[in-house]
Structures are given as C-alpha cells and as structure tokens.
Length: 118
Length: 236
Image (tube, rainbow over all chains, first blue to last red; front, top):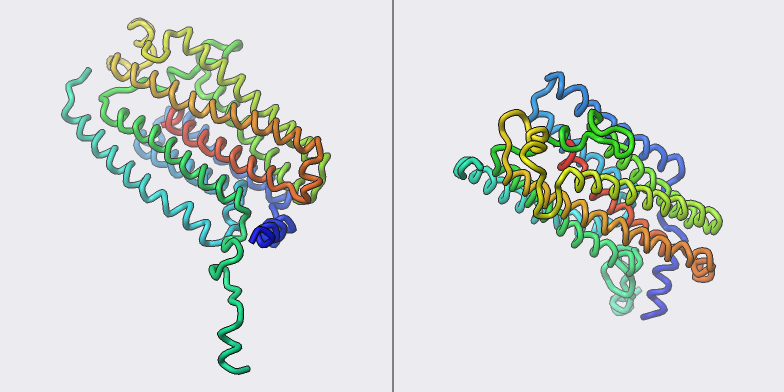
C-alpha cells in the first residue's frame, strides 16, 4: 500500500499533466492586470462622471472580481488541469456560500427597511 | 479467454482502489481542503460585512476614507495606494507560479530566485498594510474606536453621518484585513521555510518539488482573498 502511494506521487511529479508554460503565466498576469485596470477606470472615471449608476457599477465590480477569481483558481492554482472529481468537490461546496449570501442579504435588506436611522 | 479469468482480472479504473482517483498527491488534496475551509471562514466574515452594510441607511464612502498615500499625500488620491498593494500581491503570485514552473523542471537555482522574489513581495505587501493601518489609527479608527464627529463628516456622503455605521465599518475593516494580513504573514513564514528546504537540497533528494506547489496553492489563495477584500472594501 505504501509503495503504491509513493508510486502515485512519483507519477505526478513526472508530470502526467505538465505545469503552465512561462508564456501562459505572463498571459494570465496580463489578464489579471487588465481587469484591475478596468476596475480602476470604473471607480475613478466612469462612476464619478455618472456614465453608469452606482448599482450597475457594483454588479460590474462583482462580475469582474469573479472573473479574476476564476483566472487565479483555474490557472495559477492549476485547477483547470485537475481531474473532474477534484474540481467538483471544490466548487460545488460553494452552494452553501451562495445560500448564506442570499440569506444574509435578505436579512440585511429587511433590517434596512425596519430599523431606526442611527 | 473464459469468464473466470475475466473475473480474476484486476480492475484499473480510477475509482477501483489502490491509487489516488484524482491522481493528486495526498498532501496536495489536504491543502485544497484546508483552503476550502478557509474560504468558508473568509466568506462568513465578508457576508456578515455585506449584511451589515445592507442594513444601514448610510456607510462611510470608501473613496473618502481611503484617499491617502502614506508619506506622500494626505488626501486626494483615492485607490492609488491600495492599487499598489493589489499590484504587489498579484506580482508575487506570478513569481510563485514561476517558482512552481521551475520546480517542474527541477531547476533548483530558479526555484530559489523566484521564492526569494515571492517573499520580498509578501513583505512589501505587509509593509503597505502596516502603513495603511497606521494612517487609519491616526485618523481615530480602531477596534471599538471611531474618529470625532468633525472627521467623520468628511468620510460620509454629505448629510448622512452615522456613528453606528462608522463603528461597524471600523471593526469589520480591521478584523477582515487583519485576518487576511495574518494569512499573508503565515504565508511568508511558510515560504521562508520552503526556501531554506530548497537551498538545503531537500527537494532535490526527494526527486520532486511538490512542496513548492503546495505552498504555492496557499499563496494564491491569499491573493484570491485579497481580490474579494479589495472589491468589497475599496470599490463597492
């Protein structure tokens, strides 16, 4: 059994799936930087000049953040190249977080309407 | 081939046992699951922050609270300093992947170089955070502490100052960025340990640089959390 285990990690080390190439790494870096720059443009130019409403801006921010998160997890953390089982076990768990977000924002929205303004 | 010998054949499908079905090394799976649990912790903190912000009729305006570059400008530069911090952290994430990439090629020298770069990036980020915290402390913020009414008037949109909101903002800002900073600090410490192990040739003897990949996962996670902290504290 223990021999088997060593075999597994060895197999991995020899790269049945290779790591990212240097070119790809810099590409992903460029994308992350670009998204951040877009966020800055929205914050410092688009919103102050009123080209976009605050509410829409927040949605755009969150969408861009999730996009950045995808690039970090998929490429830098290499999850895109892992087996489907591992991908699913790590992502499907966030169902609980989505549920929690919905729950707490509804709660917060209710308090917003019913609490005294302090 | 008769039916008996077919039954005797050893199954080799991924889930028939004897090997990792995901062909990921044990320690790496455990790192992933640790990070998943850590993600839940950070999510809980951020969701509580969101719920608080949703429930209040007003909230300190981030463009007004964070508009200084410590040591350079006192006000009038929203987002610039935090932009530098974000850039440092993304950059150190890149040097970390480059260390992992060098590890795949078992190039000890390159791993050492990129690990040192990553550690420097981590220290720079921590330094920036220390500067920012100091600035906010001087303004009067802190756990259980808010600035005077006079200062607060400049941090909210006109005519809607709330001491309750300011207090919630202050507590949550220091708790969440503090918890993140603590993660960065532990990440730097772990990176230093791995750097010394690399210099000692431990991974060279082992024949693989999987440990570098594992700390890499942790380091990227710290970067990932910052992406969310940045959005929800500084942008939204």
